[in-house]
Structures are given as structure tokens and as C-alpha cells.
Image 1 (cartoon, rainbow, N blue to C red):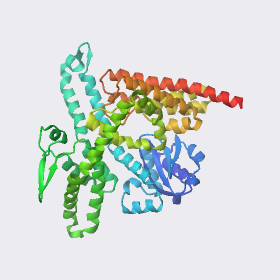
Image 2: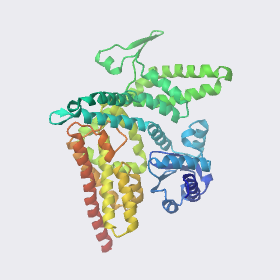
Image 3: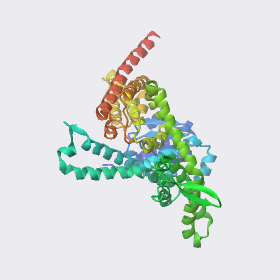
Image 4: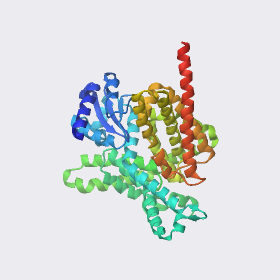
Length: 481
């Protein structure tokens, strides 16, 4: 029996042959589902050969980047062995000046790198966020009045202690979310992660009042008198954008001091100077600017959702999976984290889920129309089960984009499901998972659990029906020709 290493090495050889050799690859890394390879020349890629590889569920090229959809969990193992076996640069471990110079020479898009960086930052901390969200959902289930006028905890008093521990296990992660973000961002940009944690501790200092308390007059800001300049200091709890920026700054400052200080004093002075300089930058520049950006992002989203109402929801639900095709959906992690931190709920997550299930309806329609084709049934089943668990790439790149009509029908399904999300005021208490697992993070308000299931069912059934109608029209059109 072929072991995993042999299988992955053979896969790596096949990939190299299909991309024009190792010399055509700049760097490689992965996100939640895709092996991503930045290339010098995408014209050398043999997409058909890649599409036939056993581990590949779909192939996409976005600007200079080849994306091989492999699936969650498995992609981690495959990428690690691919990088180790081929010797191609690991982008996630190479965020330093040398990598930067290489990227400039190879004319890699700044937007591409920005999106890749956001992907890396939130992929690193996503397990913790998911754990917190699901634990909150579990505690809500235990404390909501679902048995007559009683909760499970009230009906079974012995569970009260368990509920208390579950509550602490979930709330602590979200309370310290900016610290996790600055840690992950520092690591992503090539700095020492522990320095990111140290900076996060400064941002979240218990000695400083929160901005909300200062704003309401419940507390007074700490005043730092710097040669007559009265600088107000407060903590940055809930400020995800500030944390992202500070992670980048910490990495750059730390690397600078490590590089330029003499070895004798570097060990002591580099960390101290890094935190000192970064603290001044935080309180004087990044903090105020970052909080303004955070407010702008969250208030703009809330304004759009209230101003455009059901139409805005339907447009977003209809096009969200088209955004996934481009890879730009990875930018939403920071936005969702900011929504959770400042508003307590995330109205985007249910929209992501119904958009996903709309594409699932498109897959079901494709399977029905090709029910006598064993290969179509095999690909369809695999893609549909991936969708049920929140992963749409195998369906998008393996079926829906390829045949177009399932993609169109799926978009309509997402839009119709989004209308129901709006009408029921459905939100989530966390982010990072959709489909069936997403029910665990649905907000229980307004019968949230039931409405979550109904919204996703509407998206899927609508996607199925519209796809069948579109397919019928397409076939008539081709017949007329």
C-alpha cells in the first residue's frame, strides 16, 4: 500500500510537470482549502492535466496565482510535503525583505499579497474563533427556554456548573481576539510571534479604560503629558484593524533592530526597543487612525444593510460566491471579526451560508440532469457534501463554473435565501463556518436556529429549481441554433 509521503511526492511531481517545472514557481502556501502557487508564467500551466489529479477537486488561476482546490485538513498535509519535496519557497515562512524583493521583481500584485496575508492571518487563528463560536452556541442551547418555560440548565440543575465553564471557555477567546490577531499578523509578516503577543498585551492592558467607557463618561482616559502634549490613552479591545496594522509594524521594527543592533546587546535591547517604539506608534498614530477605519467599516456595512434593505441582502447573497471565485472573500474575515467585536453579531455569515447552499442546489440540478453519468454522479456527490460542510470550491471549480448554468442558478438561489435572512433578522455570534456546522454559531434570537435551517433550505431548493429552468433554456437555445 502506498503511504501518504509517496502519494504526496508523486502528486508533487505531477504538479511540477503541469506548471512548467520548479523554475516557474515563485512560492507556495495554502489557505483553508487551496494549495496556492505563485507563478512567473501562467501560460505554462496545463489545467487539464492538473484537473485529472486524484487529490485535486478543482483548478483556478487568479492573476499570477495557481490555486488547486484540495479540501480542508488534507491541504495542510499536501502543502507541507509539496514545499518540503520540491524545495519551492514557503511564502508563509518567508515574509521578510528577501521575499519582498523577489515579489517586486516578479511583479506580483500588491492586492494579491494583501489578500494572501489576510488569509494567512485568519487561517492561523480560525480554530480558536470556531471553538469560541460553537461553545457560545452550545451554551445558548443550554440556557435558552426550550422546554416549556424552562431551559435545559433549569430543568437539570446539575448542568449549571458545566454551563458556567462553557461560558468562560467561549467568552475569553472573543474578549482577547485583538491579541490573537496581532500575534498571527506578526508571525505572518516574519516577526517573532511572542513580540506580537507582547504588543497585544499592551493594546489590551487592564490598567487602561476602554474607549466605550471613556466615551460614555464611565471612566476617564489616562493622560500622558509629553512636553505639554496631553495624549489620551485607552485600551484597544475589539479593534481588529488596529491589531492587524500593529502586527505588521511589530514585525518590521523587530526585524530592523535584530538586523542593526550588535550581537552583544541585541538580545536585550531589540525586544525592549521594539515594544517601546511600537507603543508610541500605537497610541499616537495607529490607534486613532485604526479605530476610525474600524468605525468606518462597521458603520458603512450597517448603513448599507439598513439603507438597501432586502435588495442589498439579495444582491450580496447572489454575488457572494462569485467573490469566492476571485479569492477576495478572504478579506471578509477581518470585517466579520470587527463586526463581532463591536456589534456582538455578524449578519454576513448567514448570507455566506445561503449563497453557498444556492450553489449546492446548482450541483444537485447538475446531478439530476446527468443522473445516468457515473462520473458526473461521483463528482457531484463529493462536491455537494463539501458544500454541506461549508466548502464551495470543489463545486465551483469542478462543476458550476465549468458548465455555467449551475453557477447562474446557484446565484439566484443565494439571492432568494438572502431575502429570507433579511426578513427573519438572522445573524451569527461567530464566523468561519457555514452550511450544516454553521447552525452552531447562529444567533438564537428570533428563532435563529430554525430560521437558519429554513434559510439554507430555501437557498438550496431555489438554486436547484432555477438551475433546472436555466438548463432547459440553454438546451432550447442550443437546439434552436
